[in-house]
Image (cartoon, rainbow over all chains, first blue to last red; front, side):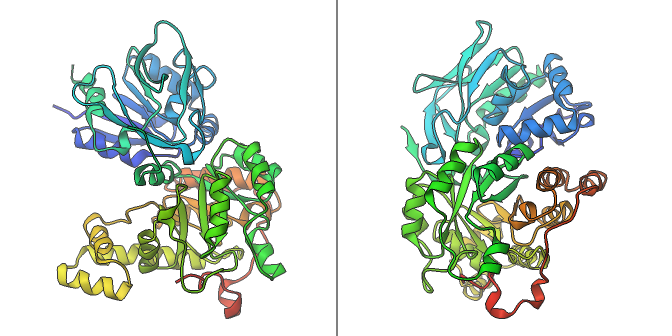
Length: 185
Length: 294
Protein backbone atom coordinates (compact mmCIF):
# COMPACT_ATOMS: atom_id res chain seq x y z
CA UNK A 1 0.00 0.00 0.00
CA UNK A 2 1.32 3.43 -0.93
CA UNK A 3 1.71 5.73 2.07
CA UNK A 4 -0.65 8.70 2.04
CA UNK A 5 0.92 12.06 1.17
CA UNK A 6 0.09 14.87 3.61
CA UNK A 7 1.01 18.48 2.86
CA UNK A 8 1.88 21.08 5.50
CA UNK A 9 1.51 24.74 4.60
CA UNK A 10 5.07 25.96 5.16
CA UNK A 11 5.01 29.70 4.55
CA UNK A 12 6.08 30.08 8.18
CA UNK A 13 5.41 28.51 11.58
CA UNK A 14 5.40 25.20 13.44
CA UNK A 15 5.89 22.87 10.49
CA UNK A 16 8.50 20.47 11.91
CA UNK A 17 6.38 19.27 14.82
CA UNK A 18 3.43 18.35 12.58
CA UNK A 19 5.82 16.60 10.20
CA UNK A 20 7.27 14.51 13.03
CA UNK A 21 3.80 13.37 14.16
CA UNK A 22 2.68 12.59 10.61
CA UNK A 23 5.83 10.64 9.73
CA UNK A 24 5.50 8.62 12.93
CA UNK A 25 2.05 7.59 11.65
CA UNK A 26 3.53 6.30 8.41
CA UNK A 27 2.58 9.12 6.04
CA UNK A 28 4.77 10.93 3.55
CA UNK A 29 5.06 14.66 4.21
CA UNK A 30 5.49 17.57 1.80
CA UNK A 31 6.05 21.22 2.72
CA UNK A 32 3.73 23.44 0.66
CA UNK A 33 4.74 26.97 -0.32
CA UNK A 34 3.08 27.40 -3.72
CA UNK A 35 -0.16 26.29 -5.44
CA UNK A 36 1.77 23.56 -7.29
CA UNK A 37 2.68 22.11 -3.90
CA UNK A 38 -0.95 21.08 -3.38
CA UNK A 39 -0.97 18.77 -6.41
CA UNK A 40 -1.45 15.12 -5.51
CA UNK A 41 -1.88 15.59 -1.75
CA UNK A 42 -4.24 13.32 0.18
CA UNK A 43 -4.61 15.72 3.09
CA UNK A 44 -3.37 19.10 4.30
CA UNK A 45 -2.27 20.64 7.61
CA UNK A 46 -2.45 24.38 8.29
CA UNK A 47 0.04 24.80 11.16
CA UNK A 48 0.43 27.36 13.92
CA UNK A 49 2.47 30.49 13.46
CA UNK A 50 1.48 34.10 12.89
CA UNK A 51 -1.82 34.34 11.02
CA UNK A 52 -1.00 37.84 9.71
CA UNK A 53 2.26 36.62 8.18
CA UNK A 54 0.60 33.53 6.69
CA UNK A 55 -2.32 35.53 5.28
CA UNK A 56 0.07 37.87 3.49
CA UNK A 57 2.06 34.88 2.19
CA UNK A 58 -1.12 33.18 0.93
CA UNK A 59 -2.02 36.34 -1.02
CA UNK A 60 1.52 36.76 -2.38
CA UNK A 61 1.67 33.15 -3.61
CA UNK A 62 -1.87 33.10 -5.03
CA UNK A 63 -2.84 30.30 -2.63
CA UNK A 64 -6.29 31.58 -1.58
CA UNK A 65 -8.39 29.87 -4.25
CA UNK A 66 -6.29 26.69 -4.38
CA UNK A 67 -6.58 26.28 -0.58
CA UNK A 68 -10.36 26.84 -0.69
CA UNK A 69 -10.68 24.35 -3.53
CA UNK A 70 -8.59 21.81 -1.61
CA UNK A 71 -10.82 22.08 1.47
CA UNK A 72 -13.96 21.84 -0.71
CA UNK A 73 -12.64 18.70 -2.41
CA UNK A 74 -13.39 16.58 0.66
CA UNK A 75 -9.78 15.74 1.37
CA UNK A 76 -9.05 16.08 5.12
CA UNK A 77 -7.71 19.37 6.48
CA UNK A 78 -6.36 19.84 10.02
CA UNK A 79 -5.64 23.35 11.28
CA UNK A 80 -3.99 24.39 14.56
CA UNK A 81 -3.91 27.84 16.20
CA UNK A 82 -3.08 30.33 13.42
CA UNK A 83 -4.31 27.67 10.98
CA UNK A 84 -7.73 27.76 12.66
CA UNK A 85 -7.83 31.54 12.15
CA UNK A 86 -7.05 31.04 8.44
CA UNK A 87 -10.21 28.90 8.13
CA UNK A 88 -12.58 31.55 9.48
CA UNK A 89 -14.97 33.87 7.63
CA UNK A 90 -12.55 36.81 7.75
CA UNK A 91 -9.72 34.84 6.12
CA UNK A 92 -10.13 31.87 3.74
CA UNK A 93 -13.81 31.43 4.66
CA UNK A 94 -13.51 27.65 4.61
CA UNK A 95 -15.62 27.28 7.77
CA UNK A 96 -18.58 29.46 8.84
CA UNK A 97 -16.83 30.51 12.07
CA UNK A 98 -15.54 33.75 13.56
CA UNK A 99 -12.30 33.74 15.56
CA UNK A 100 -10.96 36.18 18.09
CA UNK A 101 -7.17 36.39 17.86
CA UNK A 102 -4.95 36.34 20.98
CA UNK A 103 -8.17 35.77 22.88
CA UNK A 104 -6.52 34.56 26.08
CA UNK A 105 -4.02 37.47 26.15
CA UNK A 106 -0.36 38.04 25.41
CA UNK A 107 2.39 35.42 25.75
CA UNK A 108 2.51 35.74 29.55
CA UNK A 109 -1.07 34.35 29.56
CA UNK A 110 -0.20 31.39 27.32
CA UNK A 111 -0.95 28.13 29.12
CA UNK A 112 -1.37 24.37 29.15
CA UNK A 113 -4.70 22.90 30.18
CA UNK A 114 -6.63 19.63 29.96
CA UNK A 115 -9.07 19.45 27.05
CA UNK A 116 -11.63 16.76 26.27
CA UNK A 117 -11.77 16.39 22.49
CA UNK A 118 -14.85 14.75 20.96
CA UNK A 119 -13.99 11.46 19.28
CA UNK A 120 -10.70 11.04 21.14
CA UNK A 121 -10.86 8.20 23.68
CA UNK A 122 -8.95 8.07 26.93
CA UNK A 123 -7.71 10.79 29.27
CA UNK A 124 -7.99 14.48 28.34
CA UNK A 125 -5.55 15.92 25.83
CA UNK A 126 -3.01 18.34 27.34
CA UNK A 127 -3.79 21.42 25.26
CA UNK A 128 -0.95 23.88 24.64
CA UNK A 129 -2.44 27.35 24.09
CA UNK A 130 0.07 29.94 22.82
CA UNK A 131 -1.37 33.42 22.24
CA UNK A 132 -4.30 31.28 21.22
CA UNK A 133 -7.54 32.24 19.47
CA UNK A 134 -11.12 31.31 20.41
CA UNK A 135 -14.03 30.53 18.13
CA UNK A 136 -16.55 33.19 19.17
CA UNK A 137 -19.34 32.38 16.66
CA UNK A 138 -20.18 29.49 14.34
CA UNK A 139 -23.05 28.28 12.18
CA UNK A 140 -25.18 25.34 13.32
CA UNK A 141 -23.58 22.89 10.90
CA UNK A 142 -20.22 23.30 12.65
CA UNK A 143 -19.63 20.63 15.29
CA UNK A 144 -17.89 21.79 18.48
CA UNK A 145 -15.16 19.28 19.33
CA UNK A 146 -13.61 20.95 22.37
CA UNK A 147 -14.09 23.76 24.85
CA UNK A 148 -11.89 25.21 27.58
CA UNK A 149 -13.03 27.78 30.15
CA UNK A 150 -16.34 27.98 28.23
CA UNK A 151 -14.54 28.98 25.03
CA UNK A 152 -14.86 26.94 21.84
CA UNK A 153 -11.36 25.72 20.94
CA UNK A 154 -12.04 22.81 18.57
CA UNK A 155 -14.43 22.59 15.61
CA UNK A 156 -15.21 20.33 12.66
CA UNK A 157 -17.39 20.42 9.58
CA UNK A 158 -17.11 17.48 7.22
CA UNK A 159 -13.45 16.70 6.68
CA UNK A 160 -12.16 20.06 7.94
CA UNK A 161 -11.11 20.27 11.61
CA UNK A 162 -9.49 23.10 13.53
CA UNK A 163 -8.03 23.54 17.02
CA UNK A 164 -6.98 26.67 18.92
CA UNK A 165 -4.23 24.68 20.64
CA UNK A 166 -1.13 22.81 19.47
CA UNK A 167 -1.39 18.99 19.61
CA UNK A 168 1.80 18.96 17.53
CA UNK A 169 3.77 20.40 20.48
CA UNK A 170 2.85 17.44 22.71
CA UNK A 171 3.75 13.74 22.70
CA UNK A 172 0.03 12.91 22.45
CA UNK A 173 -0.43 11.67 18.89
CA UNK A 174 -4.13 10.80 19.17
CA UNK A 175 -5.46 13.81 17.25
CA UNK A 176 -3.02 13.26 14.38
CA UNK A 177 -3.81 9.53 14.41
CA UNK A 178 -7.54 10.24 14.07
CA UNK A 179 -6.79 12.71 11.25
CA UNK A 180 -4.64 10.21 9.36
CA UNK A 181 -7.13 7.38 9.97
CA UNK A 182 -9.55 9.16 7.62
CA UNK A 183 -7.12 8.45 4.78
CA UNK A 184 -7.27 4.70 5.33
CA UNK A 185 -11.05 4.28 5.43
CA UNK B 1 -5.23 22.09 35.54
CA UNK B 2 -4.22 25.43 34.00
CA UNK B 3 -0.46 26.04 33.98
CA UNK B 4 1.02 29.24 32.59
CA UNK B 5 4.66 29.85 31.63
CA UNK B 6 5.67 26.19 31.38
CA UNK B 7 8.85 25.48 29.38
CA UNK B 8 6.65 24.05 26.60
CA UNK B 9 4.60 27.23 26.41
CA UNK B 10 7.68 29.48 26.53
CA UNK B 11 9.61 27.57 23.87
CA UNK B 12 6.41 27.01 21.91
CA UNK B 13 6.14 30.64 20.88
CA UNK B 14 9.68 30.49 19.46
CA UNK B 15 8.65 27.38 17.54
CA UNK B 16 5.70 29.26 16.05
CA UNK B 17 8.04 32.05 14.86
CA UNK B 18 10.07 29.62 12.71
CA UNK B 19 10.56 30.44 9.06
CA UNK B 20 9.82 34.11 9.64
CA UNK B 21 11.45 37.49 10.07
CA UNK B 22 11.64 39.47 13.32
CA UNK B 23 12.19 43.15 12.59
CA UNK B 24 13.66 45.96 14.72
CA UNK B 25 11.30 48.95 14.93
CA UNK B 26 11.61 52.24 16.79
CA UNK B 27 8.01 53.47 16.74
CA UNK B 28 4.41 52.50 16.02
CA UNK B 29 4.63 53.62 12.38
CA UNK B 30 7.56 51.31 11.68
CA UNK B 31 5.84 48.51 13.59
CA UNK B 32 2.78 48.81 11.33
CA UNK B 33 4.98 48.72 8.21
CA UNK B 34 6.77 45.62 9.53
CA UNK B 35 3.48 43.85 10.29
CA UNK B 36 2.01 44.74 6.90
CA UNK B 37 5.16 43.39 5.22
CA UNK B 38 4.78 40.01 6.93
CA UNK B 39 7.06 40.19 9.98
CA UNK B 40 6.29 37.41 12.48
CA UNK B 41 7.25 39.72 15.37
CA UNK B 42 8.80 43.11 16.03
CA UNK B 43 11.64 44.07 18.36
CA UNK B 44 10.86 47.41 19.99
CA UNK B 45 13.93 49.54 20.63
CA UNK B 46 14.76 53.25 20.77
CA UNK B 47 17.66 53.14 18.38
CA UNK B 48 18.53 50.47 15.83
CA UNK B 49 22.03 49.01 16.28
CA UNK B 50 23.64 51.14 13.55
CA UNK B 51 22.51 54.29 15.38
CA UNK B 52 23.69 52.93 18.74
CA UNK B 53 27.05 52.32 17.07
CA UNK B 54 27.15 55.86 15.63
CA UNK B 55 25.95 57.67 18.75
CA UNK B 56 28.05 55.81 21.32
CA UNK B 57 27.25 56.23 25.02
CA UNK B 58 25.26 53.83 27.19
CA UNK B 59 22.46 51.99 25.37
CA UNK B 60 19.60 51.02 27.72
CA UNK B 61 16.15 49.42 27.68
CA UNK B 62 13.66 51.46 25.65
CA UNK B 63 11.16 53.93 27.08
CA UNK B 64 8.13 51.87 28.26
CA UNK B 65 5.78 54.42 26.67
CA UNK B 66 7.29 53.71 23.25
CA UNK B 67 6.94 49.96 23.82
CA UNK B 68 3.29 50.44 24.83
CA UNK B 69 2.58 52.41 21.65
CA UNK B 70 4.08 49.61 19.58
CA UNK B 71 2.06 46.99 21.49
CA UNK B 72 -1.07 49.00 20.74
CA UNK B 73 -0.21 49.36 17.04
CA UNK B 74 0.22 45.68 16.08
CA UNK B 75 -1.23 42.25 16.89
CA UNK B 76 1.94 40.24 16.18
CA UNK B 77 4.28 39.49 19.13
CA UNK B 78 6.31 42.40 20.48
CA UNK B 79 9.79 41.75 21.88
CA UNK B 80 12.05 44.20 23.70
CA UNK B 81 15.66 44.27 24.85
CA UNK B 82 17.13 44.37 28.35
CA UNK B 83 20.82 44.87 29.09
CA UNK B 84 22.88 41.76 29.89
CA UNK B 85 22.48 41.09 33.61
CA UNK B 86 19.97 43.93 34.12
CA UNK B 87 17.15 41.94 35.70
CA UNK B 88 15.35 45.08 36.86
CA UNK B 89 14.92 46.17 33.23
CA UNK B 90 13.67 42.66 32.48
CA UNK B 91 11.18 42.93 35.37
CA UNK B 92 9.83 46.14 33.81
CA UNK B 93 9.50 44.44 30.42
CA UNK B 94 7.66 41.55 32.06
CA UNK B 95 5.31 43.99 33.80
CA UNK B 96 4.66 45.51 30.35
CA UNK B 97 3.77 41.99 29.15
CA UNK B 98 6.12 42.02 26.18
CA UNK B 99 5.96 38.63 24.45
CA UNK B 100 9.73 37.92 24.51
CA UNK B 101 12.66 39.58 26.27
CA UNK B 102 15.99 39.79 24.43
CA UNK B 103 18.92 39.90 26.88
CA UNK B 104 21.02 41.66 24.31
CA UNK B 105 24.66 42.52 23.70
CA UNK B 106 23.42 45.37 21.47
CA UNK B 107 22.74 47.29 24.69
CA UNK B 108 25.54 48.16 27.11
CA UNK B 109 26.02 45.26 29.59
CA UNK B 110 24.96 46.00 33.17
CA UNK B 111 26.75 43.07 34.81
CA UNK B 112 30.17 41.85 33.71
CA UNK B 113 29.95 38.55 35.61
CA UNK B 114 26.34 37.35 35.53
CA UNK B 115 23.53 37.04 33.04
CA UNK B 116 19.90 37.33 34.13
CA UNK B 117 18.42 34.29 35.90
CA UNK B 118 15.82 33.72 33.22
CA UNK B 119 14.10 30.88 35.08
CA UNK B 120 12.79 33.51 37.49
CA UNK B 121 10.59 35.06 34.77
CA UNK B 122 7.26 34.07 33.23
CA UNK B 123 7.98 35.85 29.95
CA UNK B 124 10.39 33.83 27.79
CA UNK B 125 13.88 35.06 26.86
CA UNK B 126 16.00 35.01 23.73
CA UNK B 127 19.79 35.39 24.06
CA UNK B 128 22.64 35.76 21.61
CA UNK B 129 25.50 33.30 21.22
CA UNK B 130 28.68 33.12 19.16
CA UNK B 131 29.35 29.42 19.77
CA UNK B 132 27.77 26.25 21.16
CA UNK B 133 29.09 26.64 24.71
CA UNK B 134 27.68 30.15 24.98
CA UNK B 135 24.33 28.97 23.61
CA UNK B 136 24.13 26.13 26.14
CA UNK B 137 25.11 28.40 29.05
CA UNK B 138 22.23 30.72 28.10
CA UNK B 139 19.84 27.75 27.84
CA UNK B 140 21.01 26.54 31.27
CA UNK B 141 20.09 30.01 32.59
CA UNK B 142 16.60 29.63 31.11
CA UNK B 143 16.75 31.07 27.57
CA UNK B 144 13.99 29.60 25.35
CA UNK B 145 15.43 30.76 22.02
CA UNK B 146 19.01 31.32 20.84
CA UNK B 147 20.04 33.71 18.11
CA UNK B 148 23.51 33.64 16.65
CA UNK B 149 24.89 37.11 17.43
CA UNK B 150 26.58 38.24 14.25
CA UNK B 151 27.77 41.84 14.43
CA UNK B 152 24.69 44.05 14.79
CA UNK B 153 24.40 47.36 12.98
CA UNK B 154 27.03 46.65 10.32
CA UNK B 155 25.08 45.27 7.38
CA UNK B 156 27.95 42.78 7.06
CA UNK B 157 26.76 39.17 7.31
CA UNK B 158 30.21 37.63 7.83
CA UNK B 159 29.97 37.39 11.63
CA UNK B 160 26.46 35.91 11.51
CA UNK B 161 27.85 33.23 9.19
CA UNK B 162 30.82 32.59 11.45
CA UNK B 163 28.61 32.17 14.51
CA UNK B 164 25.96 29.92 12.99
CA UNK B 165 28.62 27.74 11.36
CA UNK B 166 30.42 27.49 14.69
CA UNK B 167 27.23 26.42 16.49
CA UNK B 168 25.99 23.95 13.87
CA UNK B 169 29.51 22.59 13.26
CA UNK B 170 30.02 21.87 16.96
CA UNK B 171 26.59 20.21 17.13
CA UNK B 172 27.62 17.88 14.29
CA UNK B 173 30.90 17.04 16.00
CA UNK B 174 29.13 16.08 19.26
CA UNK B 175 26.98 13.57 17.39
CA UNK B 176 29.99 11.33 16.76
CA UNK B 177 31.34 11.29 20.33
CA UNK B 178 31.16 8.58 22.98
CA UNK B 179 30.34 9.20 26.65
CA UNK B 180 33.89 9.96 27.73
CA UNK B 181 34.42 12.38 24.88
CA UNK B 182 31.15 14.15 25.69
CA UNK B 183 32.36 14.78 29.25
CA UNK B 184 35.50 16.38 27.83
CA UNK B 185 33.40 18.36 25.34
CA UNK B 186 31.30 19.69 28.23
CA UNK B 187 34.48 20.89 29.91
CA UNK B 188 35.84 22.45 26.72
CA UNK B 189 32.54 24.16 25.85
CA UNK B 190 32.07 25.19 29.51
CA UNK B 191 28.52 23.89 29.28
CA UNK B 192 26.47 21.49 31.44
CA UNK B 193 27.12 17.84 30.57
CA UNK B 194 23.38 17.11 30.58
CA UNK B 195 22.79 19.65 27.79
CA UNK B 196 25.85 18.44 25.86
CA UNK B 197 24.43 14.90 26.00
CA UNK B 198 20.99 16.10 24.86
CA UNK B 199 22.48 17.94 21.88
CA UNK B 200 24.62 14.93 20.93
CA UNK B 201 21.59 12.62 21.04
CA UNK B 202 19.23 14.95 19.14
CA UNK B 203 21.57 16.71 16.72
CA UNK B 204 20.15 20.16 17.49
CA UNK B 205 19.74 22.65 20.32
CA UNK B 206 16.87 22.00 22.77
CA UNK B 207 15.37 25.39 21.76
CA UNK B 208 14.99 27.03 18.33
CA UNK B 209 18.14 28.54 16.77
CA UNK B 210 17.59 31.84 14.96
CA UNK B 211 20.13 34.17 13.38
CA UNK B 212 20.85 37.89 13.78
CA UNK B 213 23.47 40.57 13.27
CA UNK B 214 24.31 42.00 9.85
CA UNK B 215 21.49 40.56 7.72
CA UNK B 216 20.69 43.26 5.13
CA UNK B 217 19.33 41.59 1.98
CA UNK B 218 16.95 38.81 0.91
CA UNK B 219 20.02 36.82 -0.14
CA UNK B 220 21.53 37.22 3.35
CA UNK B 221 18.32 35.80 4.85
CA UNK B 222 18.33 32.85 2.42
CA UNK B 223 22.00 32.21 3.24
CA UNK B 224 21.40 32.09 6.99
CA UNK B 225 18.37 29.82 6.57
CA UNK B 226 20.33 27.42 4.37
CA UNK B 227 23.10 27.40 6.98
CA UNK B 228 20.64 26.14 9.58
CA UNK B 229 18.96 29.20 11.08
CA UNK B 230 15.26 28.58 11.73
CA UNK B 231 14.34 32.28 11.46
CA UNK B 232 16.11 35.61 11.06
CA UNK B 233 16.21 38.87 13.00
CA UNK B 234 16.75 41.96 10.84
CA UNK B 235 17.76 45.09 12.71
CA UNK B 236 19.10 48.12 10.91
CA UNK B 237 18.89 46.33 7.54
CA UNK B 238 15.28 47.25 6.85
CA UNK B 239 14.54 50.72 8.19
CA UNK B 240 18.00 52.08 7.27
CA UNK B 241 17.53 51.05 3.63
CA UNK B 242 16.17 53.21 0.80
CA UNK B 243 12.75 51.50 0.57
CA UNK B 244 11.97 49.78 3.91
CA UNK B 245 8.53 48.43 3.01
CA UNK B 246 9.67 46.70 -0.17
CA UNK B 247 12.83 45.39 1.50
CA UNK B 248 10.84 44.06 4.44
CA UNK B 249 8.39 42.22 2.14
CA UNK B 250 11.24 40.75 0.11
CA UNK B 251 13.25 39.55 3.10
CA UNK B 252 10.09 37.77 4.30
CA UNK B 253 9.63 36.18 0.87
CA UNK B 254 13.26 35.04 0.69
CA UNK B 255 13.04 33.55 4.20
CA UNK B 256 10.00 31.46 3.22
CA UNK B 257 11.54 30.32 -0.07
CA UNK B 258 15.17 30.11 1.10
CA UNK B 259 15.72 26.88 -0.85
CA UNK B 260 14.19 28.17 -4.12
CA UNK B 261 16.71 30.33 -6.03
CA UNK B 262 14.11 31.52 -8.56
CA UNK B 263 12.00 32.94 -5.72
CA UNK B 264 15.02 34.48 -3.96
CA UNK B 265 16.00 36.05 -7.30
CA UNK B 266 12.52 37.56 -7.59
CA UNK B 267 12.77 38.79 -3.98
CA UNK B 268 16.17 40.37 -4.66
CA UNK B 269 15.16 42.37 -7.73
CA UNK B 270 14.29 46.08 -7.63
CA UNK B 271 14.99 46.70 -3.97
CA UNK B 272 16.69 50.07 -3.94
CA UNK B 273 19.85 50.73 -1.95
CA UNK B 274 20.76 48.65 1.11
CA UNK B 275 21.69 50.30 4.39
CA UNK B 276 25.05 52.07 4.66
CA UNK B 277 27.30 49.27 5.77
CA UNK B 278 30.47 48.75 7.77
CA UNK B 279 32.95 45.96 7.19
CA UNK B 280 32.87 44.04 10.47
CA UNK B 281 36.50 42.87 10.22
CA UNK B 282 37.73 46.48 10.05
CA UNK B 283 35.95 47.64 13.22
CA UNK B 284 38.22 48.37 16.18
CA UNK B 285 38.02 45.80 18.98
CA UNK B 286 36.24 48.16 21.38
CA UNK B 287 33.38 48.70 18.93
CA UNK B 288 32.53 45.00 18.53
CA UNK B 289 29.25 44.01 20.17
CA UNK B 290 29.47 40.20 19.79
CA UNK B 291 32.16 39.93 22.47
CA UNK B 292 29.75 41.20 25.12
CA UNK B 293 28.41 38.32 27.19
CA UNK B 294 30.46 35.12 27.42
